Amino acid sequence: MSDKRRGRLIVFEGVEGAGKSTQLERLDGHLARAGVPHRAFREPGGTVLGDSIRALLLDPLSTISARAEALLFMASRAELVSRELRPALEAGTIVFLDRFFLSTYAYQIAGRDLAESDVRSANTMATHGLVPDVTLLLTLSADVGLRRAERRSTTDRIERSGREFHTRVELAFREFTTREWQAAHEECGPIVALDASGDADAVEALVFDAVTSRFPELRTAFGAAA
Ligand code: T5A
Image (cartoon, rainbow, N blue to C red; front, side, top):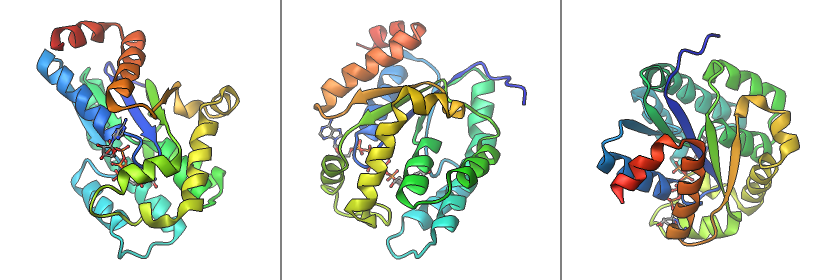
């Protein structure tokens, strides 16, 4: 398909509690203070349909089979891509996205053991070929991430999937940082691994370097916000 976009799609990925939302909020704050137009979304969600799907997927009381789960994530994604991401990118907007299809590859292929070929085909339909300009993959052990996430008062259905499940997810994310894996999965675009084990300020410095080295035009925005 033709790609008419002029904006940038910057995706954050990683295990539970890796610090994606924290870093996105910080970036959002910098750009807002500098007056740089941008949008931020999270998956699942970001549309009326997606938010309903998110509630179903994360409800600890929901019982959802692995295939249905994968397709629900895809339905939320298809809606977000067509209604929000593509229009924003075509309008020249910088778009930040908290999780995208690397999460499906980690959670549904590695975590739930679904066939990679099935999930990739469904994902192609959902994204309609949209490739991120960069994915910042916050690397952290599943144990540390879950401990961070569990500080909240509630845990969702997927967080409750068990340690073995989350270890498979962690290992998948680690594999995604390798050159071999990326060469075999061109739909993912460039992936930059950032060590998320430091405190939030240390991770923010890594995010700043990764974003401004790839998109130097944003350096001014950060400078103006500092
Ligand atoms: N999913 C999603 C799939 O299975 N398949 C898919 O295709 C997709 C898209 C989404 C769930 O759906 C799954 C993955 C998820 O299980 P969610 O609530 O959006 O649910 O889940 P997460 O994205 O994992 O959200 P979390 O909030 O759990 O993780 P974050 O955003 O990475 O972490 P954050 O920033 O909220 O931080 C968590 C805690 O740690 C602290 C924060 O203050 C907070 O208390 N923290 C740090 N502590 C120490 N050091 C740091 N550097 C810290 N950074 C943050």
